[in-house]
Amino acid sequence: MLAPSLHLTVEAADAAVAAAHEAYRAVRTAGDAGAATAAEERLRDAIAARSKVNDRVVAAAAAGMDRDGQQLERIDNGWRVKVTDEYVIEVWKTLFNWRLVVMVPNQQAYVEHGFCYFGLGLESLTRAIAAGLEWEDPFTTKPAGFDKQAF
Image (cartoon, rainbow, N blue to C red; front, top):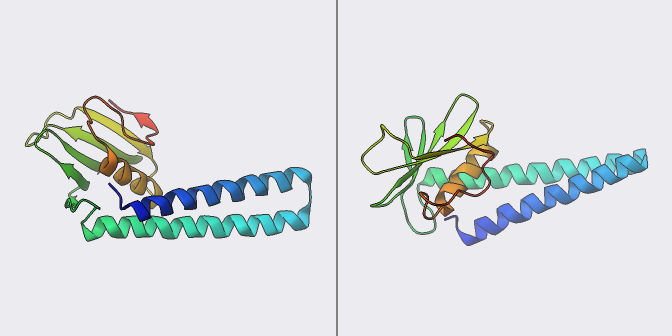
């Protein structure tokens, strides 16, 4: 799991972007050019702040520790997010997205499930890693925030 403070920071940054986007859309619809310029600037600031939050999440992953002290391991094509006696969760870079996968330990020939997080940027990587860290019981449940179930 993400540290609670970092998880709250992600949620707050997402809410700020959503609110700024809604305000910008409302002002643009009203046709007020001056207010639209100010709303656009607030939206840019909110997006920049969200980007900094992404950097913090990725830095926490790169540091190799989540809240529970589980080791995140860099692998050839992504990250090994969680390892238990029952399953392994990894995030793989594919052609067009990051894919969160689950498999039986010591066995990579057969992957049980795969969930896509569209895009190859930091935001989609952050979403995939965060979902993998929080995912409990991956054989019977689905992770949070995925865009498409691949298999």
